[in-house]
Length: 201
Length: 249
Length: 83
Image (cartoon, rainbow over all chains, first blue to last red; front, side):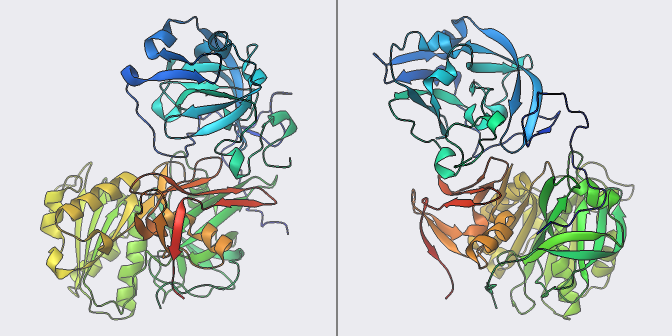
């Protein structure tokens, strides 16, 4: 049944549509909407660590150690499963490659875990070869807690629920165990170009 | 009867807009005639769905401003970064249709046969469902004592200002206390600051009266007022709250 | 943006087929009880997340696609409602 069309309603969308950059079913925005599944955590930096578990040896970086690693500034388009896409977002962070170098594992999957209990699953190859960062700065400023600060995972080639806020580490695994949203209807992989939003897409 | 269960699925229906009235520069009341309206209770809300021609949709909830005895009315505040509220306040006209479902809610409702005195605390557009309660009291000629504590930024932001002045002047058991937090007109005799425990102590019923309490407004406002009331000795179970999103509406 | 159970009153009515804001839930994690109207609701997320106001554990997760709804109520140990 077709819904009733509201005369004159457009919503808060941008008019332009740069060719080839907006995945199917997405709308462009200039905002950076805050989407959250729970209260904003506030871990003091002196207590913060990033860990990789399940590799040849457990690995851990303190905040200072993470910040001492070589970092990059990248400009990426991001796509949220709630249909918003934002182009040319600028992030600074440590490439996941840099962290995973030392992990020495041949696990095929990882479960990212975060303050507040959020988790998301990824194939290891989707966070390597320049495809993912631990990002601590957005738009030239330190990452706001609302947007995942002090640091979030950034995996822009997948739907943005995979770019886990308040990231604290990876558990390397042999199985692609579904995380918080993947257990509840969202697609295990999440490729925006194939519109993989939900189970079975 | 409390918590009346609605059998079957709630359906969306298109209501015709039959009237529109600007309450303040940012707030407008819309009168609606839904064809299948079952009636409602004071404090309930409706869900509104807007669909653009290309299928884009946005959905929001709005409190019913009218008493059950009156024609259905919604009062909407235009939020700066809102998606639905600018359409409802600036674009929608009498004769247009509005897709809605409701009434919804069994918790944040007041019935005229509740014998307890009532304390209503409103932050900004949170006054809307509480106004439905005041109007329901009038329509049923209830003598239940009611007190409204209503916080707004400036006098221009006070919704239903004339009607509230009339209600207070009638000296019919409804007391209205206002506070203006940002600026006050000359000669203002109300409060001039955000609601705090001292103000609550001065305005609220003593907890020994065991009033029914309804607090509505932005999440932070509701949290602060609830904490203040509990600090005064109110049983938290008697304080019913409804939180509005402060951003994006 | 954090709201309360009133904000999903319509959604719950459609999913459960009855008015749900008065239903008293027991948190599996901490045992706190209270009406569903008084839980913390996070609506600006890929889905709706409902959390216990006392301990913030997840009570419910709701995801809606055009064709299906996924409702996880594992965080609720029990619901009490009028007969």
